[in-house]
Image (cartoon, rainbow, N blue to C red; front, side, top):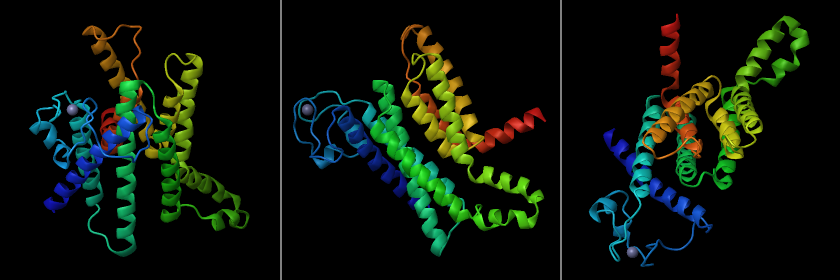
Length: 291
Ligand SMILES: [Zn+2]
């Protein structure tokens, strides 16, 4: 079983390497899949052994083999984070135990979906941190894919039974309450998305765009879709706490002043990851405290 984890980690490292290329191409407005990788300073085409995730960076001591220019820490960090998150996701899906047939296909599909979403969020994290912008080219496809995946989940789990709703008058209207409850369960991610999106939109309107931007509205919407209710609430809560602590820290160290802009996207992504992986545990822990 350990071999699967190692393979998934390597896959994550390779994906992280690709995400670095995506970030670079977004910065330079090139097509995502283009020609070969080059050093930014000396334009030397990089060999395959210069492009091994993490290892090349360590081996070359963070410098270009040909001209000695420093390579950004972003490269190994994004690779390591992608590898680690891929392993965490795989671990969650492996806990369901071995599946066969149709069920196996579904778990592969869901694994691919989560790999894709985590990759998108990593790009958003890095790009917003560097440029204070959440790229539309990343967030719109992520919203569309998540929307389709959640619809698919609804159909697959059979929560939605239109025939039952159609027959409500015959069953007696007392069943209506239960059906409304079912509908809320079914549309949970969509409701959470609209609520979280509206929350950020109201902040943007109230602060006239000084506090947050349109990118945060889109990211809030995506978070709602991904997490559903009440996990999205946990994610938002964590983002605001981590964001405030980081903000105060940066001001104390003298890195930023009260007037500096600090992008909020990275904290939203961080909150999303924590809520996604440990949100249920946090809710349980919280309920245990207050009861
Ligand atoms: Zn070079």
